[in-house]
Length: 197
Image (cartoon, rainbow, N blue to C red; front, side, top):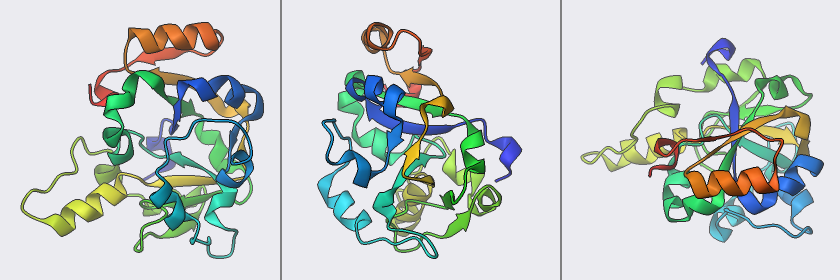
């Protein structure tokens, strides 16, 4: 993938967290764990991520993780909760921060690769990462690989500053109304398709 092909990065979060994010930023797992917040992460996945150390860098839990494309298996598994979730839109200029790392798939995968940003975008398979579907009914290995590639990540040390947040996607009018009430200055766009609705 080339940088000019990437319009934004994305972050899945419960809407209730957004006011705090707009003041403190998107925090790494390590920084946020002692703060009151709601999480979309599954404990078993976090246990896997806790074992990952970025080559030449730090433990994975010391990075704020953004998605190249948040319309992915993680969001699909949470479609029943769509009214309480949003996807924050993050400026690609975050790629120019020091020590940002890119993965070609889920960072907890055994087969993921890491590369320094921004040039590391070259390891991301654009076609597979932005594919509408990642199911391969006749090939379980292809399904596993593709679902992991849909979760390609951008890892930012410690925090993504609120200045990088451009807006949000929500799934429906009730979510939009809640965002407008809680965060009136943040543009929010309803996109049911993005949330598998």
